[in-house]
Image 1 (cartoon, rainbow, N blue to C red):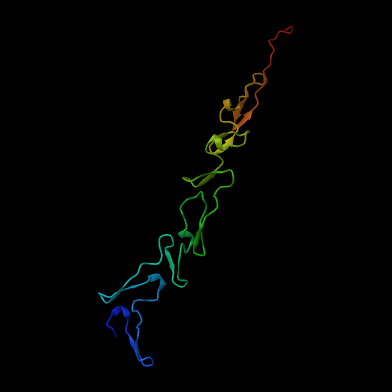
Image 2 (tube, rainbow, N blue to C red; image 1 turned 120 degrees about the vertical axis):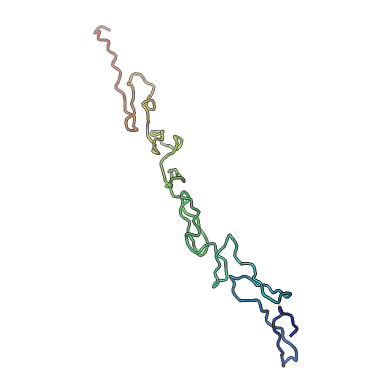
Length: 175
């Protein structure tokens, strides 16, 4: 024995007429504990740094690897609009968009709506956003086609209704 704690306890090897190196005393053979270090001055073992970091915080002792997740909840970013993330084989996978094509996602209320502004209404027949729905009109003015002779159009329940044509009769038969 050379007296160095970190060399372990040497043994005598009769076959080679020499001392055989000892086994380092600090390896607990657990991956998740990290690689322990030997402190020769203190004649003690100190814990090594953990093998996993904040990107892969879960340690799998059996597989000797660090994982990003062990369940779907480990991947949840708390955002509704980008869908539910899942844990697949220790790695987080992105979710699918929560809303169908053409819908607008509202993160604050976790809702999918048709529109939040007139610019979201692509259908020329329904160009106005009212209460998150694209409609033809909100006021009578939205329905005005600018033609006098076909009468004043009106808005009724979000749809434009044709006006009554103007009757040009002054009551005089000869005019």
